[in-house]
Length: 132
Image 1 (cartoon, one colour):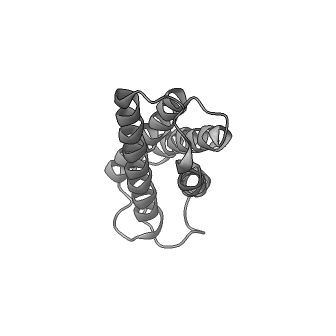
Image 2 (cartoon, rainbow, N blue to C red):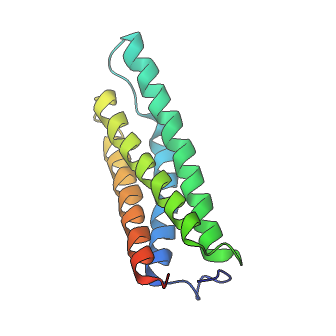
Image 3 (cartoon, rainbow, N blue to C red):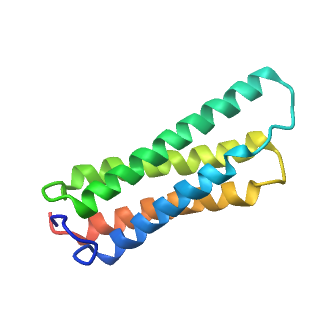
């Protein structure tokens, strides 16, 4: 598949692009999730996974955008790297939820994790449906 327009993309890639973009916006909104403990090692891990998550989200959005809209980047390598970054973003959101232990904004972080993981699953479905 070569990119170009949103209408020319498959249903999996359209849904995956929308989900990963919404997940990034929700992640940025939920980035103010507070840390309950004063343990410095947990605070460092918490901040590290927040940074890993936002960087992975940004790269996954960028790669999905390239695959969907830019001519000549419709290769499976771009899709595979994008889904790896989407999985990393989803799992780092789950880890942030486990470390954060707070009620406020935890539903947004969980929604962000679900968006990233489902977007990666849609990328896998696109890989399986596209001709090799």
